[in-house]
Length: 84
Image (cartoon, rainbow, N blue to C red; front, side):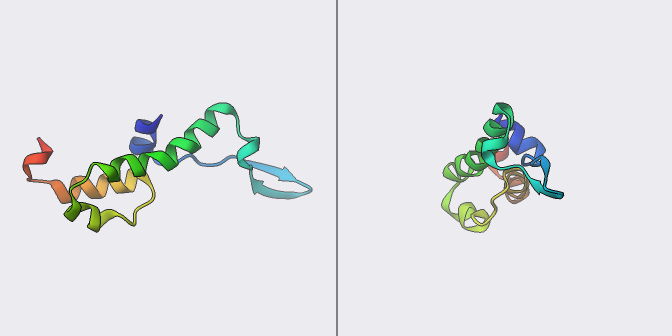
């Protein structure tokens, strides 16, 4: 599921109508699968950031969405020996 977060982007939180108002579901209202995906959306960027060289980390550390972070890293690392 972490790889899914990196490849497909974050979970799009389902909505619910509550007293005539549409709102995103609370974490406690998510299905088990959606809750696991939400957790992975938080973990994935942290896992990616931990494995980066310091100079790359400094350039991408503000990205919080794993898919965007991974795409930025791929762009920065093009042509380096780490992208084989």
